[in-house]
Length: 413
Image (cartoon, rainbow, N blue to C red; front, top):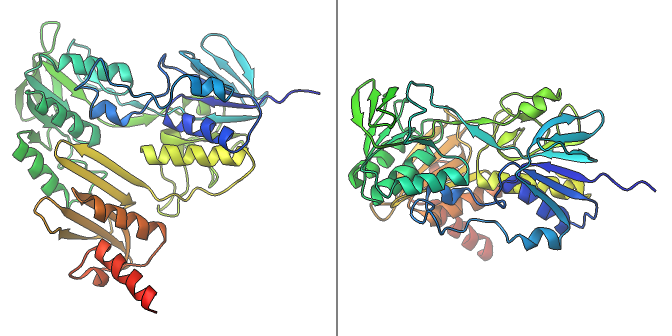
């Protein structure tokens, strides 16, 4: 009898880990192999921009101990990346020269940082943040840095800015768009978020282009469209590009990510799945195909594919939600907002709390909150249950209070 080729997972991040852990939890008994390009055990990424810089040599971010993989007969191959796929033969080829067959292939390759396309980007003291080693390097640099320029006003950039500020540096955030988090946060909420960072001491320059980084071997200034900034450390995060080149070269359909169906199977080859940052997929909360970069998405998609391969197929319908800890600001989001949605901005019972409710065709579709975890959780519960909520329903109240009132009415009925 021929033994099964099993499941091969390309990528050792959160999504890949979620696949293999759910495979075993769901009773899959065939061979499971994970190829991870980094030499580190699979680890959590969120702490890299929030905490790794405050504990550069001692932070433990591994998802599980190494023994987890051996106990579940998961063949984890660290430091060996897959460089080619042969979907006809159902094999993968790794950088080390290993060729391995598969019954099911899961691409959990994640994304790469966009490079900073300006002169001087190669100078010492200029860093991107993606893998753990980047975080450790930046953490050590922050021990002595006095003038830090963060290029990119997205989630990671703002988290890094507040970490640097807490370490005693003077911090400037340079953002090309005319507002922070322009692709993620509503225009109504962004000014309040910006004000809180500026009040804490972060200098924010929006609508500003970085033109060059200069210095004698090491960066000491940043030339922008609005002047020159002193800098002994530059950290940039200006977006991410999905790692879909393996799929493209193998003839699978890609479009800013591997195109998959509602069960996260490649639309070209159902023996291949894609999960996490590298997957472009349909979603009931989105208009058209979407690619989501979040821990929640990586975990939920990986678990869904693990269950499907083990024999329990389902469509991917998990509510998207996200959080970002930026110093004393906790930004949380639930649902997916589009640019045409109507947004209602409502303050909480304390000055630090704020919520932005997004409505589409009169119905609540997304909620953004600042320092208001209870309202975020209420939003998630209501959106997950597809409970209809209108702007009129929220007149003079909050989602949490509305949900409580509805539960009381149901009990009395």
